[in-house]
Length: 293
Image (cartoon, rainbow, N blue to C red; front, side):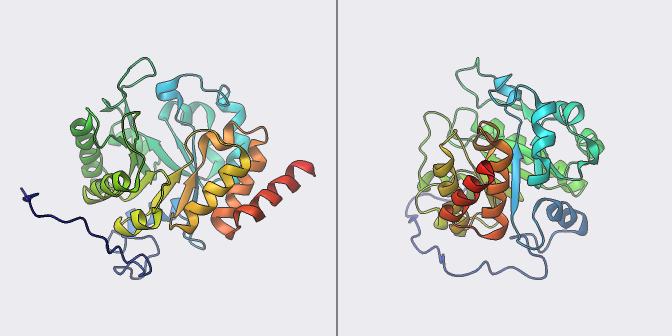
């Protein structure tokens, strides 16, 4: 084991220097993967912009009937044209998502927690690879709890999923969870995203923070930023813009879309920020124009 004594925290993240191990494939850190892996990643990240609009609707696996997602069968089809990747459970995918939608699939494969638990950090891998293949999943979404009581078991889940995915050329999405006792600082996110990437995850989903460009620079695979709690639309678009400017390769604005009064218009606006480079002010004006048209 590396000796922690004498280790210094690096201050040189080279944020202005592009990722160096980038050859013919456009997804960060994926140039040496096989064709099947790259095909799945190309289903997630748009080949033109290199970015993705991910829509998570997996909240019910631990929250039950979530505000805004009471009727998945009504909500999801309306949003599909504006998103690139559906992030959900196998139950929701099979029951509520039209299979002809032709969108990427990030399959939630961990479970075991609920809102009735004080500690959500203890989960298991609940979906086997055969079912992930049957669902044509483009990546396996694994919750990771760095610094929580369930850290060891969640990293074991992550490693098992990565190993299984590698056998069938299916990437793994490491979802960095932030519990109530965890700090939401660049120090924490540099630690958590780097650990998850070094264990072999091909994509990281995490939160925006101060010095986010350093978090991105230190992580050798693409980061997708989660929207987190519901914000006023203008604030959510500012968060989206700052995340993309900071180096995120995509956004997953779940609650900031499905809990918006104008969910379809909000999703269309997020798409403009992710793929067309809209600023926050341009995006908010676009959103206002859509809802007033």
